[in-house]
Image (cartoon, rainbow, N blue to C red; front, side, top):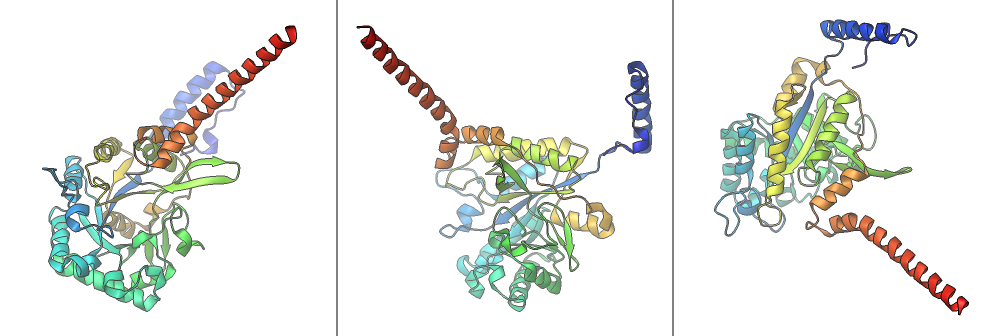
Length: 378
């Protein structure tokens, strides 16, 4: 936080005097709280769902063929518990129509019994024949939300207070429908991915906003690389973003007065490709270890954040800011994941490939020029 202008030391003061003045400034600032950093609230949010061709056994519990241990939500809760924090699990209860109600009831109760925050994730197609929330009118969205809220209440006794739409495909009608059914916080807005539903103000990129009484917390976005007016924007995801990028984004947001950070996860983040992904598990462990140890960072759940805001509406008032991690971090991430997809291969190998091409072209040109010179001399 910048010091008040009356504390600035004029440059005309001699060096020794400036040092003494600086020490006095530091003492006065600490005493008056001018240098006290505001907390930034970090949320690890897990969308609990099966893929279109998957099953809860694999995609939620992480039970993989040939693997004696689970690599799903149970393992995630173990890691959160090891660091003494809770997470928010947005559960798609609508797939009960596909896999059976008891299956999804067991998922909900498992999360709730371990003290984590269970909230609603909407992929309503199996029951309501609606692919995305934004495709339905306000009345239909209210019906979809109410069914999900009642399912979770029957399974756990928990009252839902937060929602995230499947694919982030929500709009302002979703916020109105949320308020109608008593869901007072919303986590669907994601500028970097299907953000067109909230393209118009007042929702912003990374700033918490209250709309019609509903607390809207966006998924955190950042610029991974840019060139002139072009920007490649992505969102914080435990699989797609490196720990170094996530830490840098949190650092920049805190220094610019943004009050919330939302990091995306899925129930299959540890097993997306049908085998354990230890890199992602280590990333979660690493991030939690650093964030929990930082006195200026508070790892909270959606429910905890809502209570903080409800008791003090000023607590989340901050600025909007879009951080940039840059080409170098993007390149390092690609090298770290060289075997995970063709995009990483292209990004990682293009620069050295370009260098080899330039050197090779130079050598060929030099060789041909030398041959011409020898031919001319003969």
